Amino acid sequence: MNNLRKLLFPFSIVYGILTYVRNKLYDFGILKTYKIPLKSIVVGNLSVGGTGKTPHVAYLAELLSQTHKTVVLSRGYGRKTKGYIAVNDHSTAPEVGDEPLQYFTQLAPTVSVVVCESRKLGVEKIIKEIQPAIILLDDAFQHRKVKAGFTLLLMDYSKPYYKDCMLPTGDLREYRIGRKRADRLIVTKCPTNLTEDTKKNICTQAGFSEAHVYFSRIIYGDVLNFDNQVVNLIGGVLLVTGIANPSPLYDFIKESHTVELITFPDHHAFSVLDIQKIHAKFDALQDSSAVILTTEKDFMRLKSLLTKNELARYPWCYIPIRVLLDKEKEFIQEITNYVDTI
Image (cartoon, rainbow, N blue to C red; front, side):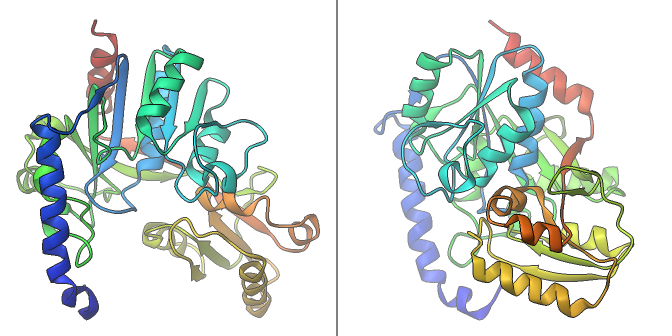
C-alpha cells in the first residue's frame, strides 16, 4: 500500500459507512430489490478488478448451456455505448466491452450475451426477448437492485479480502461482512501446491465453512495468432497487457522464455500511439524469433485496431485461459441441484 493511499484513509471510512448504510437499506427492504423470476446466478467479488471473473463466468456459461438456454448479462465495462445491446457477430469492444465480446466469441451461438448497465432492465428485456432458462450476471454482487437465486463470490488467493480495506486506501468495494450475501466462495488463481491446511486456514479467515469454498487455478491454453492458429514460442516474448493483474501470466511465460513486459491499466482503450510504442519496443528487441503476446481479453480490443499490414509485419499472438476447480464434481452437482430444483 503506497503512502498516498494511506493518506486517503479518512475517505475510506466515509465510503465504508455509505456502502454499509446502503446495504442495510436493501437488507431492511427500504430500498427495493427486483427478484429475478427465473434461475439466475451472480458472479462477483468484494474488491475492484482482477479476481478472475471472466473465465469463471465462461466456465459456468459453457457448463449450463449444455442443458439449458443460457444468457450472460454484463454491464459492458469500458464500452462507449449505453443501454441494452445484444452482442452479435458485428459487435466490437468499444460497443459492448471486451469481456462480453470475449464471452460471445467463445460461447456463441449456444450462449447469448447481453450488455446493460441497468441489470433490472437487462433482465426484464432478456426474459421478454430471449426467454432463457438461466441468466448469469457478471460482476453484479454490489448491484442490489436485482436479486439472483444463487451467488458466487470470488476472491484472489494472493489478495484476500480479509487482508484488505475499503477504497480508496484499499481495494474493497464494501466491508467484508458483505460476504454473507454469497452462497459459495471460490478462491481464484491458486498455486498448484496448495495444502489442505492452507485451504482450511483460508476458509476460516474468509468466514466460510470448508464445504462452501472451492479453489480454482488458471490453466493456459495454446498460444494463438490473431487468425487463431497455434504458434509455438521459440524466442523472446514482449508481453502486452491491459488487465488488473498480469503477474500470473508473466510468471508463467517467464518459466520458459525471456520476457519484456508492457502494462496498461485494466480495460485500457488502446490507441494508435500505444500500438506505435509497442512496435518500437518490439523492434528494439532485435530477436527474429520473438513474438508480441497479449491476453485473450486484450485481444478483443486490439484485433480491430491493428491493420493488416501491421499484423503481417509483427507477430501478434494471444493466450486463452480457462479455470480448473478442486472438488469440481461437487461444484457441478451444487450448480446442477440449484438449476434443476423447482
